[in-house]
Image (cartoon, rainbow, N blue to C red; front, side, top):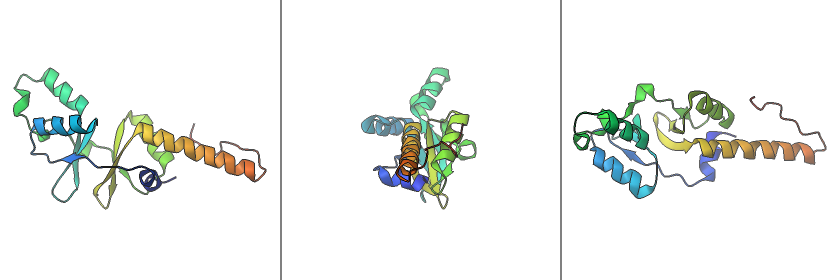
Length: 152
């Protein structure tokens, strides 16, 4: 299964913010929408970084300055440090990367622009569905279902 198929199965809303926005704006978006992560994008929807509730809490707990005066660019993980998948990537590959890097939310890009943001739960769910479909297909064809091609 490709990431495009995963995204098509769910109604995704890309929640994003500009890097010059104030921290209070990010907190409001996160709280109002019951989400954990925002993509930081420029005016053309190019990914500049990512910011999470965890990043904000960490900055709050370690900062000696007044956090309410900070902008997103002071807190975000910059683009060069963000792992981004492409919409044509295979879900198994994405799951492997997310697991190896301990990533909970992964931005998906298309032509360098924000396309979606998937969670590890979304990817695991799609991966399991892919395995079930593969096993069911083998069973229907009268073959013994195996997990060949499934990463260990």
